[in-house]
Image (cartoon, helix red, strand yellow):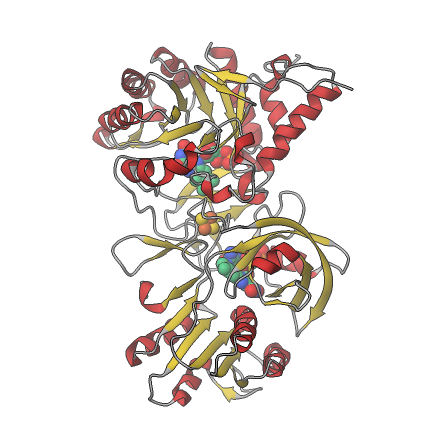
Length: 306
Length: 261
Ligand SMILES: Cc1cc2nc3c(=O)[nH]c(=O)nc-3n(C[C@H](O)[C@H](O)[C@H](O)COP(=O)(O)OP(=O)(O)OC[C@H]3O[C@@H](n4cnc5c(N)ncnc54)[C@H](O)[C@@H]3O)c2cc1C
Ligand SMILES: Cc1cc2nc3c(=O)[nH]c(=O)nc-3n(C[C@H](O)[C@H](O)[C@H](O)COP(=O)(O)O)c2cc1C
Ligand code: FES
């Protein structure tokens, strides 16, 4: 009988039992999936993006289905930092999977204050910095589209938080490696990518956009080839670990990202389609390694042949 | 609130009019935990197109713990679902959301328009089984006799009074189902439950709020998850600037909690 393969991976100081995490905004605060998924098995849980103050989000319609994907313009609705700590974190403490808090802000100061407060909360294993948000003080340009701003946000969080810091990159840029190198220089322990791709859909019957916000973020299987290409490019450019995200729905999808150089993956939209997706992916990676007589997942990370 | 993801075999498929179907699904865990007004998320096809599950009210729970859904084939997903044969299986998640709350009065009026009639069957059966003495009246509306006839007679079979309205006058009142609310008379002792197209529910809610009758409505929105995770199912809330989430705080809401236009 084949030995059970070792699925453990490390992202900075964050040790995970396997490389499968949930993607922010697609798994609520964990609790929502408690009766459908064995949460303890997850490599890590990344919660919905948290801001300093609660946000109400955008008017509906907020989601629209597209070919093999979906658009969303949720508007970063969330309960805010203090309610997250008081109301959502107690449940997460009990599940034995590391908790990664995704944060978002309007200014560098917002990010720094979020990180300082989370530094005081020992149950938070890592922060994932969403830099796809507009910098309100700088004409609303997204932090993640400008290397200098991306680096400055990273430095601010790094200075305030001494556990693992992941910076989540926006794909809506010309040169993703440039941003990845900037946040590496800013002290990030890892980069995660991709966030959603900006898109749009129109109802030709009413001639109205399908989203009240007109444009929204595309996710799901439709984005996978783009995400895989960007992960491969970034993994070759930086020395820190890369977490692959985008359209991952099966173990085969996840293995593609690992081969392209990702140390771990995040599962997003697939949680909506198949709430058991994360567990099935963990089992599928183990089965793939076993079938290939590989003892550890490390043997496939970056294992792309050319 | 526990939800289950189950592979449910289709044990029965009925056609109840043009493009209207009732599927009976073997999902005993979902059936045993279901409350009237809750819904299920159904994957209409394996694979990625269409990608997302579709929400359907729990239409009825049969005596042998099977789950029924009632739907109209109108788009990609529902047409695929209409083509599912007995013996095939569907991936179903549920029961989800918050259903109807018990009436505060002894007179209950159920108002259903189109496929909004679906959850009223489970609710009516539940009320009848509760053994509380009450009078239940169902006001059902649809476009044509073809759409409504078999649903109206099935509803009457449950043992409650049914009144119908059709847009073309081919069955019952010629006009809107809301018009039938006038027949309840002036006394406020009715609890009203409405499910149907948005303009219908709005009209029912407005009349009830004006006459001081308690009214619950079951709302529909686009949904990506049904699990309170995507936050895509927001509807404006009466209280403050925030939003209600149809899959979590709903789909059933007190009419006064919703921000009507
Ligand atoms: C809580 C809830 C309970 C529901 N219960 C029932 C039911 O018991 N019976 C029934 O026939 N229908 C019900 N619906 C509506 C049903 O989910 C939609 O008709 C279905 O999703 C359409 O899918 P489609 O692929 O056929 O249509 P699509 O091709 O996706 O679209 C066709 C049309 O349906 C609309 N639509 C698409 N998705 C939804 C959605 N999630 N909600 C509302 N409208 C949508 C689109 O805007 C479009 O106008 C319910 C919806 C909700 C939110
Ligand atoms: C409904 C929804 C909400 C999301 N919310 C967030 C968020 O709050 N913060 C964030 O960094 N990413 C958010 N994302 C992006 C996802 O985490 C992920 O990067 C993206 O969807 C691509 O992965 P997928 O194709 O597997 O979904 C959201 C995605 C969706 C679909
Ligand atoms: S449908 Fe996803 S939160 Fe309600």
